[in-house]
Length: 190
Image (cartoon, rainbow, N blue to C red):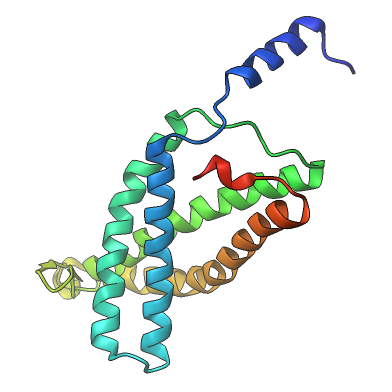
């Protein structure tokens, strides 16, 4: 069915009012989150492959993860309140893939810090913060909540594995739009 002229005109007005790029806050948050996420990936790999002492690598991993937990608390509400540029032109499959992949990235960006914080707090070790101190944890024997840390660890490890594959796919999609389709998708986020 063809949209009525009123609906088409309202849609055209909304598109004309939409910004060409995200707000400065959303852009800054995107890149802070990206750098933090890549740092967390790198520190886990460095620890597992013994490229760096595990205690140092994981202290940095947990510290940056704690920062990402704080960042996501601000990022989601601000993104929901911000004006969004119009979708990049593409077929229905590309549009659906873009929406689903961005939802997945937000889900990973929430699940990873939440499970990481839960491990530190309910496992009793707390969460180190760049060698400056530690956010204290609960004694699992006294709190009876040690099982939460165990469940959080399993989810954190599994989701992290998928997240490490998903980020290169996201970057590859940007490259596909930019180089293969000639769409300057980067102007939306830079």
